[in-house]
Length: 390
Ligand code: SAH
Figure (cartoon, rainbow, N blue to C red):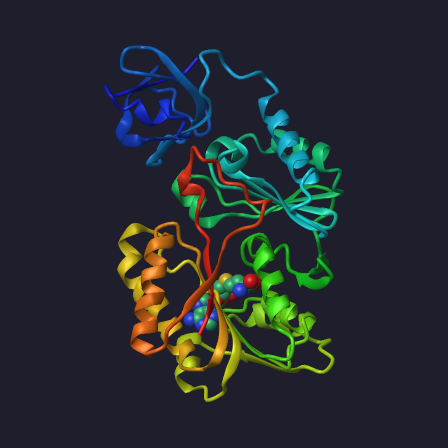
């Protein structure tokens, strides 16, 4: 048994079932030299009361990820049970809708901290973002294989997480044969080619599925701008919805190459795929659009980046407004946990003031139901979107 003993009064978050123990809350490890990456540990209050059980990340500031808050240890098969439950949760959800690309495990949102698994057709792409899951990769793989029935499991390295956790970044098959080339997925009548091995995230932005539906419904007859387009998730939805024209802007050449494949069939729609920096593009472009999507990367990965990030968000929205026709719709997103919904609204408001355009919010947007967030863990929230009318 390895015990992690907390400082006095530092057990409050755990007692509210928050799944993270930060390094500053830890008084000592017992035995002191037992700190191997991913070790299963018992967490004790300063008074010696058991407050939970979890996985240790010895060198990381996020020191323990809790998997149970009971007095007794979780059953030996807790991991298998939770993976099975997570997969069932999706199967039971009519909210996920018709698609063969689904997030099966959303880390803390499924009580499986350090684990993300996305299913694309017959392949499950897995990311281990904490030592506790990485050292149990074989058990995790077997649980995912059994629960999903998928014929291939593939691990994608997460460089930032590996650095944080002091693990070797690993990439390769977990079971079955590694996908050799990008595959096609189907989502609510749309088709996308996805690079599971080299693409961003696990290959595709599954979290924007519901927003893609919105775009599809708003697109008929309209001139659409898809800024920060990646492989054209929103552009394909716009074409599917009957857009008159689609302009897609993306700075990554490999992403753009897949986008071009995704946009190859666009009957009756004028398509322009531009490799460019969006901030510069928006300053130079002279076209007018009726539907504009602005979906930048996480501009604030840490709290210290927030000021710079909000300036960049504002800049993008301000210049996009300069290209917006009267009555245009805008979908603006922020995918940084550190830029929450209130701050994001203020940033967009600032841009609207500078642009001299009054905007109304028609809807707030967020991730779909296969990306659950536990109420115990507000840090799991990251994607904020606004559907606006100019
Ligand atoms: N809208 C996409 C996801 C966007 S993620 C979808 O739904 O699939 C953000 C994208 O912006 C990434 O593909 C990244 O390569 C691109 N990007 C980052 N900075 C950029 C910049 N300054 N100009 C253009 N594209 C950029």
